[in-house]
Image 1 (cartoon, rainbow, N blue to C red):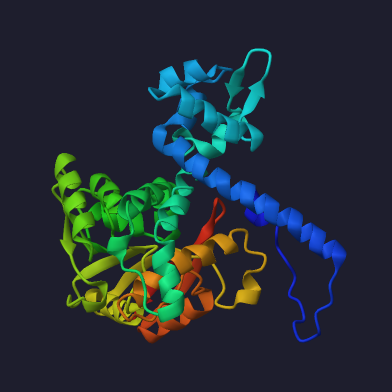
Image 2 (cartoon, helix red, strand yellow):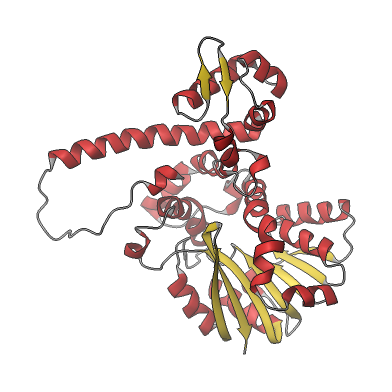
Length: 372
């Protein structure tokens, strides 16, 4: 995260003839070398998250040898040793040569372990190797247009479910629901609510458990995600929630729901205009849409100081935009932006839209929309 924050640039005048600046050349060379190292570390942190190595180091909470770490994690020592080499030289893990012991500092563990949720950025690192697998498909789109469909993305719903747990589920009770006056009380009394683009449905299952009087349904076009959600909700013995395979652009509900949720789901739709129009139809009079989506501007020059703008545009190129274009969609992209979002909510017929942010969440806006 700090690497992404370090490279904010002021807009430049590109109409002048370019002159070679040796100082700028050298500084950018140093920066590119830094990019190479930091990009490599994203792979190592992803592996550290998936293998549980980072959690193991946090649990040990002391200097330990490669054999001790490997034994505790149940992993092959030779691979653990090489992985540790990357993170020691990357200044993520401390190393003591006399004792040949490795320590994950608590200050770093607070950003890299499951115990640190919702601040576990090691989980977010999984996006990089996942997206790397479809680079050739995206490259083809640069030459021939079109897009890369969801089915090409291995582990997408698994990784997104982890991300949803951190950014949505962990914040629902204390931060997200209180944004709307009276929403918690309404859910306690009992409402009809839907999560459009629910993925594996972790947010809706959390709501179902907390608010047993409410009747909840989740829609997503992915049969894989919906099958997983239905199986998991049954395992949790939740009787007030169900999940259906539905296309968000073809909602046929009429004045059915008191509340509609969308969590990080609008910007990568094939037809987000139809989605919002369908949501508006599906709401009762004075119904509520609570939409979480990416915080950005619709204008690239206004995103120069956004702390994770390069990450967002990369995710868009490699996933959010291309999955929409794969079905001849509009390809809004991750950074569709607040300006365009407000315009689209208005065009869909929402009478009022309030934009909220959360102090701990640099990634998202929360739009509270009321039906006319």
